[in-house]
Length: 616
Image (tube, rainbow, N blue to C red; front, top):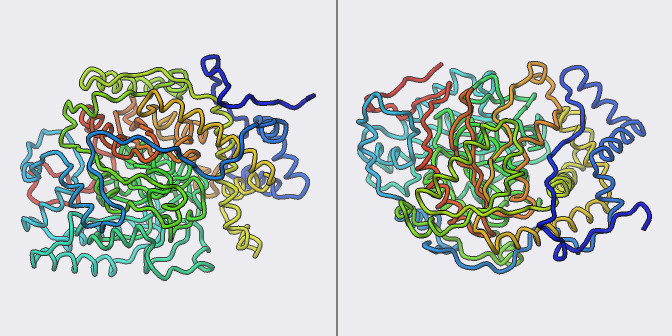
């Protein structure tokens, strides 16, 4: 067929003959004046399109989408075959109230005496306060939600929540926080807290509706065209549990970036190293949890946007199965790769937030036929059979394709500990067509994002977007309807490969990111930057969970020589959140977080003997 390439059907591909190809994106790294100039040229008719076409051709996308015959039918969003039941789990109903699900989740947690946390030895290692610590402090009258609220408010106002160097939030209203905290305090005084989440402070990413705050998506103008009349579904579930919603977290504009750079509101800094990025796009959500200011945050994850910042900031980030959480009331609700998920400081807190927010939309229940949600019995993960019987899939060539061997070595150490301590079996696997996956994901996330914003950009708002968002949109506009269909054909091929892999393993394990937190170039603070090489390292391992809809979690496993956090990613079968959480809990026990971030605020400062005052 001349210059055209014809793919074999996925079912006929000899996976054992697949050779790993190291990821290598060829594109300029630009900041400052040169970046502004590049974007202006990129948006120039004819010249701009020729530049984009050249970039796509150089990186193999033209051949992939336009010069390749793909035999599979398109799959426009994840379609899952029936799944076998998970072991050692508790099944809950999607129609149960969030409060009832939380009661079930609490019974799945390991035994824990929060009172001991308030009287620990001063020389003991650092650890974050858990949700159960806050609940104990409130119930024991060691403190009250209103007292904690005042600490949080004073810190946020002192640091100017929307100013450098720590712009965690885009919108914040102290009076709104006080009102919620007073109501929660009153419930505790009356002995009637709603749930374990009553009085727990949670931050919401700025692409999820949280009334009365506006939703800007990290832009300066979207709230002018899109009003917020009520909470999103997931936020309403948290509010019904008594959670105190702090405000809207900073983010990479429109979610179109992996670093967390935002020239509109300031770039949120990494609490472990303020000269470095948090990762994105849920940058503010990760940083505010890692800094100790609140227990939990919600983020969205369409290309690793929960897991990447969780890994870079040394906390835990859960991506649920596509369709497991209701996206109604978020900017991502029309997408085919996105979910809403929690960022927290521990796996048990991830389970509690997950219990509160889960529940598919009526449309997804009809179309995706989700299995009933399950919770793992974390109280039995110490040598429990459910962990010991797990088979962990590892594609060694891919696993080791990282910026520094410190990352893969730390993750490898944890796999050995899982094998030695629990008896988990590590199984060598091969994941074909990883380059095709990256290209298909770009089209699959970019086209819906562009569609949702085209009416506004057509009304003259394109120039109000940041330069890196405009770069992304210039690339997205170059994809044709035919390219989109080809990407969805690749999606089906990749689903075939992965479901074959899951016949032999329970999870796939990788580092979460291919590099630790990158340094922020000073020139990038004002106008952003384009650095596709950094993007490739940050997204290297996260894409399958988005394109194919699988559940995945990032859990911290240690630090590199510079003290920067390293995360391990665990990706499971469709609907297998319980398995992913159970294994993550075992990892957390083997590799506990021990390093206090450089920027940390102890807002639950009661009678704890070794409490450190906020580093300001």
